Amino acid sequence: MEELFGGFSLGLFFWQTVLFLALVFLLKKFAWKPILDSVNNREEGIKDALDAAERAKKEMENLQADNQKLLKEARAERESMLKEARDIKNKMIEDAKAEAQDQANKMIKQAQDAIESEKKAAMAELKNHVAGISLDIAEKVVRQELSNKDKQLKLVESMLGEAKLN
Image (tube, rainbow, N blue to C red; front, top):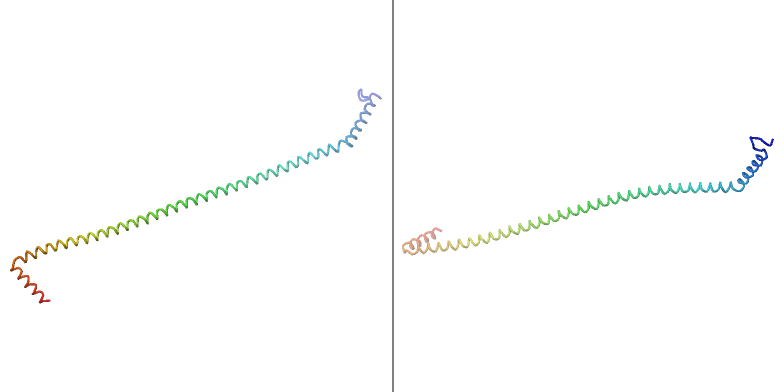
């Protein structure tokens, strides 16, 4: 009976079983708990690392969303500033045009006033000149009329006649 199982002895089988059970008992008593604890610790570490990675991913998404929001706000502010700058530029141009128009109107008015003044001065000078010429002509006519004695008498009589009628 020593030879069972095709060349294996029963005693060897018994002792191998006893040694195996003793090894299992010793492993269970001394090594199994630390191995399980280390596996559990490793599992917890992996779980914590995954949780941390998930939190970091969510935080990164939040940061990206915040960055997008900040970019939108910055773009909106830039557009607002550009619009304000365009409005200021247009207002300045309009103000400059209005001021230029006012200046042009003032210059035109001054030119018209100067022209009117020059015209009046020219008219006064022309009247004075015409009056002078008229006096010269009248003087020459009167001299010619009065150079003859008969003409003088007729003139005096006509003037006296006019004076009596009035």
